[in-house]
Length: 399
Image 1 (spheres, rainbow, N blue to C red):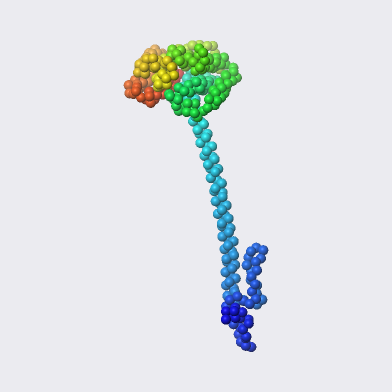
Image 2 (image 1 turned 90 degrees about the vertical axis):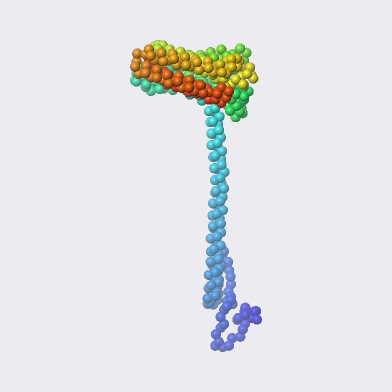
C-alpha cells in the first residue's frame, strides 16, 4: 500500500473522476543543483500548495546556510585580527619597558645629584659676570649653554669612571648602581665614559674658549687620578688628597674658570675678580670640604672592607658628621657677615635672611638624624646637596 501510495499515477482513475491530491512529491519532480549551489525544482505540470511550501523551505534553508557561513567567516576573521593585534600590543609594551629600563639605568649611572649641582653652579657663577639686563642676550645664553653641556658630559665621565673602579665596593655600599647590580656590563660602562669624555673635549675644542677647555681638562685629570687604579693614582684612598681633588673642582675650577669663560670669551671683557666671585669661591671651599667628608659617612662599611682610609673610617661616623655640620654653620656665619657689609640694601637683606634660614634648617635637621641608620645618614647627605643647590641660588644676589 505504501508503494502504491507513493505512485498515485498507477492507480486506476475512472473517467471524469478528479485526480487525487498530491500529498507528497509530484510525479515528475526533479531536484537539481546549479553552479551556485542553489536548490531548484522543476515540474512538468502545475504544482500544488505542498510543493510550494517545500520549495520555500529549501530556498530559506539554502539562504540561511550561506548567511551562517558568511557570519562564521566574519567571526573567524575578526578573531584572527584580534589575535594578530595582541602580539603587536605585547611588542610595543616590551619595547617601551626596555626603553624605560635603559633610561632609568642611565639616570642612576649619571648620579643625578652631581649633574644638578654642576648645572646650577655654572649658571649661578655665569650670572656674576652679568652687569645689566642687556647682558642677558642670545650671545650670553649660547655661551652659557655650551659651558653647561660640556661640563655635564665631563661630569658623567668622572662619576662613571669612579663606578668602573668601584664595582666591588659599590656592591656593598651602593648595590642599586647599574654596574654593581649587573644591569651594565664592564664593556658598556667603558663605552659610556669614553663617549662622554670625547664629546666633552670635542665640544670644548669646537667652542674655542680657553677657560672652558682648561676647566674640562683639569677636571678630567683630577677625576681620573681620583678613581683609576694605577700606581701613584687612585687618590680616593687618601683622605686629604681625595678632599683636595673635590675642593679643586667644585670650589676653584667651577667658580673661576666658568666665570672667566663668560667674562673674557663671551663678553670680551678683561678678567676681574669681583667681590661676589671671591665670596662664591670661599664659601664653596667650605661646602666642597663638607661634601668630600660627608659622602664617605654612609659608605664606611665598604670602605673599611676594601682598605679605603677615609676620614669616616679613621675618625668614626659621628665625629665626621658633626665636623661637617660645624663647617657649614661656620660658612653660613661668614655669609651673614658678608651680607651685613654690603652697600646694596636688597642684596644685604637677601643674603642675611637667606643664609640665616638655611643655617637654622641645617641645625634643626642635623639634631634629628639617627647616626646608627645608614638610610638616615644617606638621606641627610642628599639634604646637604639641596643646601648646595640653594646656595647657588643665593650667590647671584651677593653684591
